[in-house]
Amino acid sequence: MRWFIPDHPDKNLGNLEINIPLPKINPFHCLINWFIVKKSRLQPIKDHLLAINVEDVTRAHLVCKLIPSQCPFERRIQLFKWQLHIPPLCHFNPFYNEFVMLRFRALSYLSDVCGEDVTRYCH
Image (tube, rainbow, N blue to C red; front, side, top):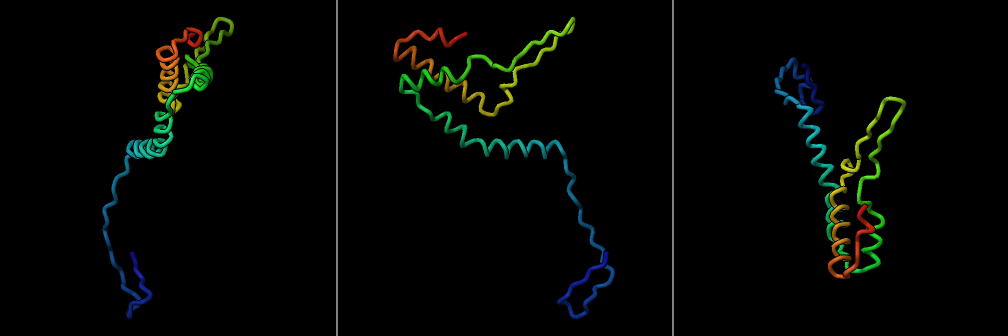
């Protein structure tokens, strides 16, 4: 390796060999680090969803109507004698657990505090 330093009086250091050990990069660790960074970026939104208080009847009804009780993406398609099953994709949503907990808090508010029948939201 030949080094050249413009401010040095010799202007040329000749052949200089430097052996620097490079760290081995594990792609699995890179993937894990990417998920950790992604998770940390989504944490403020998750915290906001967890901090939502359901203390209003209209808000509780709205939450129960907007968030389904079952994953709507699960499908079973029959094509002649073959059957194709598409698994629920809700679990790939990074906010899935927070939405389910928000819906549960709304249902609990309606049934415990307001004394309403919530069976119409459970299907």
